[in-house]
Length: 223
Image 1 (cartoon, helix red, strand yellow):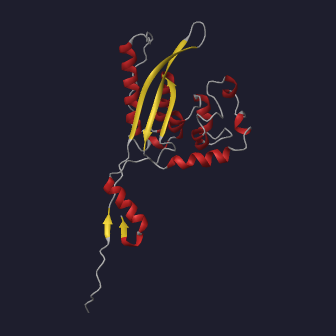
Image 2 (tube, helix red, strand yellow):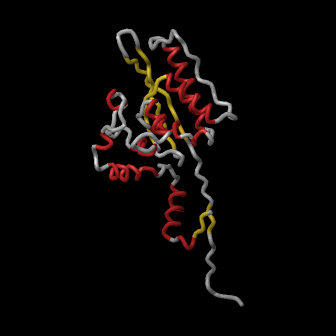
Image 3 (cartoon, one colour):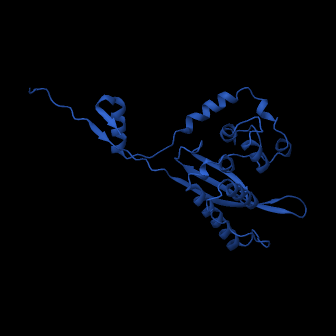
């Protein structure tokens, strides 16, 4: 039996959002440990839309020995995976030698890029703390084992917020610092969690399609 009513076609839209992670190792800085010893650290900046990460943009500072520790941890946790190599340790490394610095930063960045391409390695909480928290290496180990008063998620979410300072020797030796001094931690986490949705760039057409689907969901079927 025919009908004169107009037929509404259901529009099926398939939107594939490609996961992207851009990581950069930059800004080497020399630190004086004591009268005879110095070390160089680097800024690690991560920009990602991956749901694996709690923060979509983060910057931390790590030194070469921290990378050696990270690779050792990942190697123990992923015995069947061949991990990328780190740039070799150089006993004569000098910040004044631009070629050495550039070569090391390039090697460290390529190492992290390879690690981020492996879904299995992304499941290691120590990797996330290494990339997105201000915690020192000993504190990362304790946090990953659940031996701190804060969780991995809290350590990442509250980094750079003033609750702790990784360069403060006192706070590095104690887990009871200012985490317990503020009753607004939950509010801080709630406010910060609003930024967990990835910031993606859509074309005008895609944006209108998404908006149309939200306003009239019964007329659009998103696959």
